Image (cartoon, rainbow, N blue to C red; front, top):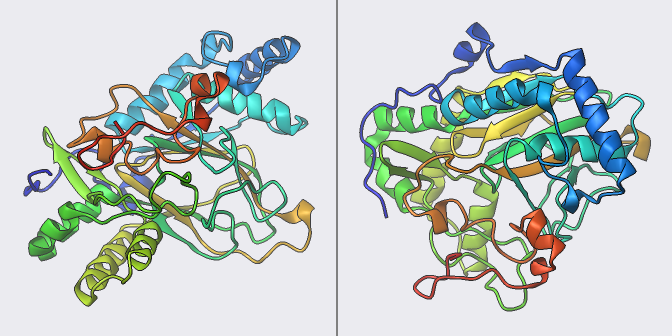
Length: 357
């Protein structure tokens, strides 16, 4: 699909934990006037009784937040690929108000997409009762969450509640992982560029195959820009569903990938009112384990939004790299498409390989 990028990558997304410690430009705090913007915009759409599908940048004005939105977009696209926003207004707000403010803020960043079998735009990451229909995905379980990417261009996670043993969030640069493999075992890169099929976690519709069928490259490159698509669980389930498992060589390769990601991993506290944003082509994210909740009120609760951003980066094959792991079943639809009932349709596909057209 794509020529292997065979030089060290020097762009800002190739960072180490020491780099993030030394330059904390990725940390951003909302000012009081920006919070006032969010509260005012929420009151406006609430008074109009608009559903999430009816809320967009045009009717959720945030004039004093624009510099912050632009900074986050720049950090995601051209910087470290990660931003951590502090001070989002959640205290004293009910969940519907927080949903509108989170969705409205992200609408200025890009276009939100559905992300589970319920076809919802807001996904609650929790082991509690707000956990949506997510097929066989293990999202929200208290165990360790391995480093991985989500399916859209950008994932944002707003922390509403943490358990008593508040686990550290974890991120790693997949660009740095590429550099380390190039440096230490460059002969293994071709297999990663060849890629793996991905499972659809039982969230596909009745006319779709349970796996992608086509291979999704772990690494791909276009115009000198390298993208990563890595979720070992989704890849493993596809191999098992197709009647086998990873070969010993493939398992060893992915073990190496995981080891190198852990080597350059950065951990940070994640507290109520914080939002983390990650570029899913350059940053892997996960978290440390925590104890299971003893009651609903003590469950860990995050609000997740998946966002696509226009002109985000070049893709070796947009149908596979960008859309090939998200467009199935009720996943990958925009709010505009939901408003006219398109999520009940089937995503159009290319005849040649079944990738989303």
